[in-house]
Amino acid sequence: MSAVMITRKVRKWEKLPGKNTFCCDGRVMMARQKGVFYLTLFLIVGTCALFFAFECPYLAIHLSPTIPVFAVVLFLFVMAMLLRTSFSDPGVLPRALPEEASFIEMEIEAANGNVPAGQRPPPRIRNVQINNQIVKLKYCYTCKIFRPPRASHCSICDNCVDRFDHHCPWVGNCVGKRNYRFFYLFTLSLSLLTIYIFTFDIVHVVMQNHAGSFLISLKMCASTVLEVLVCFFTLWSVVGLTGFHTYLISLNQTTNEDIKGSWSGKNRVQNPYSHKNIMKNCSEILCGPTYPSVLDRRGVMQDDSPSLTTPATPSSTSDSTVPQTTKPTAPLIPNEQTPDDAKPSIAASTEISTSLTEEGEESAAHRVPPLASPETDAEASIAKAAAQ
Image (tube, rainbow, N blue to C red):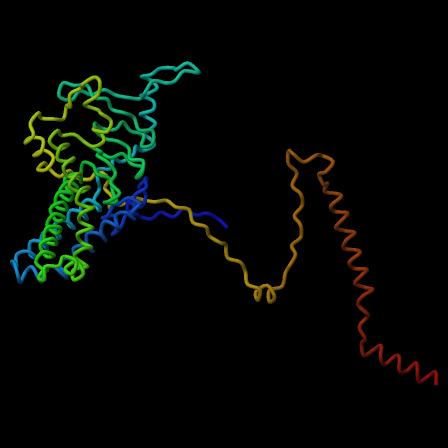
């Protein structure tokens, strides 16, 4: 077995570190834990399917045909925002190359100097000025980079994310700079859809109460009761989450910064990213430019991978047909490492070859009998006749 290096072209997403999964040739990027995301899909699609199948036909006839139309539009918008949030790059920062990481280490060592043994080295930080305020850039020991402002390392996806907000298991992805806008629109539209279905479910139950018995109406609308329960328990969490992120957007703040108290601690440090105006903050986050991905997931790179090869062995049939021949051993060539007493002399080798030749002739004479000729046969017959 021998290893041979084979060079082949691969997509960059196949070699990206971290704990993300990719589909559709790198176009779809998600976290590995996708169980809760499938639960989100099931709850939304299942509840809307029951509403379209049982309530919409009745409400379209007895109230207005625009009710199911508006519900379909809301449902499609919710699904589009959910998939856009889940399948996109949240703003993952590429890790430093080995050459870049070694250069950064040299800079850090030169700045910190020699640390005495037993003492803890100083923290690896850099200070930058943003809107006349000093902001610290922290060093990531996993990605080997100084993280940009507002970036943080997600322990679940094992990547640094620019303007990291939080990791949301309900969408199966991190929420960061590139998909926060779609995440907020998803929560907002889902809140409206939940309120819409919950309201018209109650209307449907009330309109079905012909005989005046509420229990009979509930038995006739079992699917409606199930939808009301799902919407009731979902409504509080979704509406509350939407209100919380509306508050953060008005302050131009992230969930990570709010939990850590970055701009509301004891020092009362002002938020350098806020415009001190709610409309400006909302327009920057919701109406700002869409940032391109810095990963280049579908780019092509060279991959040198070892491949094991097995040498070809001769077949058994060829071994049986081809006779084996023995070659005479070549005389030992004297070299610097061979002792003098072990070096063969020319006279000794001549005597050995002469003795081997004589022994070969004697053995051949004993083995091969003399050949008979016609003259010897005639003489033998004449002698035998004279003796008689």
